Length: 305
Image (cartoon, rainbow, N blue to C red; front, side):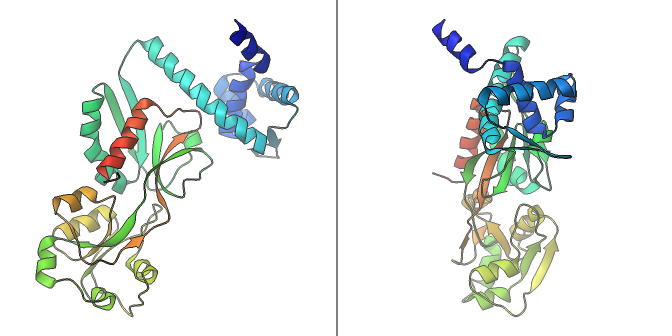
């Protein structure tokens, strides 16, 4: 009973916390009221109650925009995770169903090279799991989706979720073993620039172009020789596997192709990148044991010790 009394003293209104979470997540009193099925005035009263109890301002109410103060961000981070955990347990207990569905978002390349090969192993560990994959060309806002987790490339700092590092990355030229046997390893970066290169269009995931890669490793070739140009990285990798030339290989992403020998590194030239792959959990959702299992599988599948 002492613990219950303590919580009641420190957290006098769970309703206020629920409504604060909705406003903070949606960045709108109007949208929060619609989601909760109450009036905007009722939501405003609950937020004022919280602010009066704490003696601090949690939200800045601008003309057409609501933003969190530093204190509001701190409270939202904790409240969203706690409510997500509670909601998850309630959902499982109320349905009585042990099956679990996880909605994962990723780019087409990450889904193809990392998620799909890991699904069979994940199902063996969690046979009642249902996975729904959604492909994104651009990074979305997790506050307005039903996604449970999203794979992102970047520095790990996003305002709409909590990030967990998957693995870092390095980029180097790759080709098929047959292509390397036929044309040999280039003696210099200038010689590499004159080989048949396969390019793909850069996307929001941060793919490097050949020009950017050469500059980053300290080379300044006058002109590059392209044999195949593709709009998708998946197609560039497939062209390299089929012996059409040399593609830029993202080592962690292509770990299985490199480990199996379908692709090989053409040279020792390699570019480590400062950004990395992260799994981002939206605020309001918890890092469930299922998602944590997925994180470990993805790390292992990419050759991360």
